[in-house]
Structure formats: C-alpha cells, structure tokens
Image 1 (tube, rainbow, N blue to C red):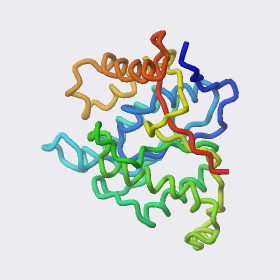
Image 2: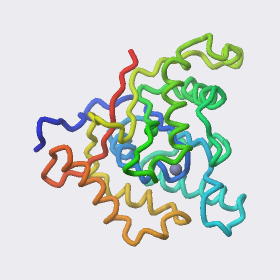
Image 3: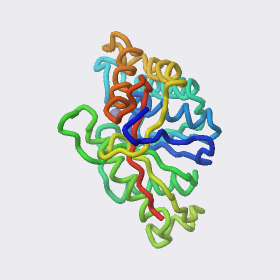
Image 4: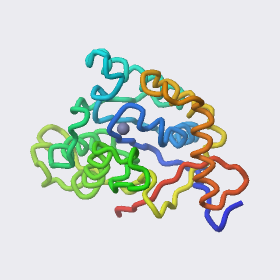
Length: 244
Ligand SMILES: [Zn+2]
C-alpha cells in the first residue's frame, strides 16, 4: 500500500551493479539492504570503496591497524549481503576532492566493472542531516556522477586510459542515495536481518549504537512511511538518473 508509489520490481534485476562510496561502513549504514536484495535477485553487485577509513576512530588506534581492521570489517559485512567483489581504491581518508584525479580513478573502475547501474552517494549537502554529508561523501558522489556522465563513455577523457586497456563504457542508470525527490523504492523487509549483520560487522565503528536493529529499522520504516508505504514495509530509497 502506498500513495501511488511503486516498489522497484526486481524480477528482472540489473545485471551488474557497481557501488562506489567513500568509506568502509557507508554502504552498510546506507544501502546494504539494496545490495542484499539485488544479490538475492541475481545481480552481480560490486563494491569499490575510495578509502580504507584510516582517518576515523578510535582515535587511539594505530592507523595501519585501523586500516586493516576496517577493510576486514567491510569484507565480512559484504559476505552477509552476498557481496564478495570488494576493492579499496587506497585514496586518503578525509582528503577526497571532486577533481579530475578522482574522476579518473572512478572512470577506471567503471570501465573495468562495466555496470548497468551505478549506486553512489548524494553529492548534495543535507543541512538537516549534516553527518550524512561528510566532505568525502560529497566528493565521491560528485566525482562518480561525472565519471558516469560523461567521462567513462568519452574516449577523449584522459586518453591515456585507452592505452592502458580501459575501453569506454556507458552507464545507463544511476541510483543516488537519499537524493530528493527519490523515485526508486527498494523493499528490504526480507533482507533486513542481513543488513543488521552487515552494519554490525563494523565493530570498530558501531559501539555507540545501542541497538543496531532498532536504529536501522527506524530509518527504513521512516523512509517507507514517508512515501506512503504504510504497512511497515522497510525501504531504502534512491533517485534514478538516466543517462541515455
Ligand atoms: Zn563515510
């Protein structure tokens, strides 16, 4: 039941879905339910994570140890939602900028993975939810959109990429998390427990959360009810951008 809005039909899911974010745990706070639903429906879901989160807490942990810890946590989280193709791009946590260098890195990723759908972070600052608008998130979102259109399809963008074997690829569709007005509604009710396990895998990051299940359930049910899904359906929502 909804006010005219439809759940995304995953009976014929996209073949390959590439998720590009800034930090380990971004996916699991945000869209891991969608990753789980897509994986279960038969999509190939691939994570590429710009940094290894080495500038995060705990503040007293050795940085190299934290980097290794967070990469391991992310791999465990991925397993809970059926995602094992995970790579870290090795860029400096806390220093990401939406510039040609970052666009080039993401273009290489797109040309390698050849996604049908690219999921990335909202490049627009949310003044009502400042914690979601970490500068690295804004940078990755903006650069990923630019990489999807026009860079990855344009052979004249960084033409040396052709010599390195990165042939142009057109990403037909982007799903951007929480970019209003949202129009893609993924029903995560059946995979919600996997999302809880995925976020809970980030042991170094979630100690402040008293009840991960309750927090994620509140978020997903709030998104659902905000869009007219009044029967308790748990939802993750995106804005669809078509590029062809
Ligand atoms: Zn983050």
